[in-house]
Image (tube, rainbow, N blue to C red):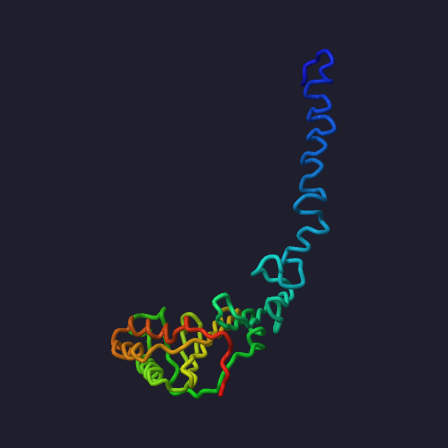
Length: 240
């Protein structure tokens, strides 16, 4: 409690320049301009989370990249092709590489159209299982078939299946020695498709892999890097 004194209200801290006067923090402090008023960062219940919260919007939240709305996402990032939270976009990234990605539920991926130039398979599908026991991680014969075809630049589509991770990967080698890479992951009704265009390695890469076919770890490493993704393309392939 403040002590009493002669006319202290004219010049002391309770005067016109006092924090309790017209310019006092009580008229301009957080009690009149705090989070509940119209000047707060929340800006009121009418314009707060209702306009920026992805849980209450009807589309992709354009203020927070990566947060899904209730019925898809903003056309800036693509067009909805399936159920809620379905992402389907084809674009060129910051490195100038074209890619196409689809992610969402099974209906989303079922509606997606992935590229293919119709090249026939030359080899059986290769089982590549990194989570399997040693000695069971790579189907050696099928792997050598794929490596030999790539070494010879054969136009063909090759498929790798990893039952441990639930992935199916295809490599379609085209006449210009580019590779159309497609990867599909399906797990607990969630799916992700991706595709891009890269380039075959030099023939010596595949020769070295074939020479090391008895080394399971080395062969598995080769099968994980079957093409040069850094030698990307800025557009989808033009199938002949």
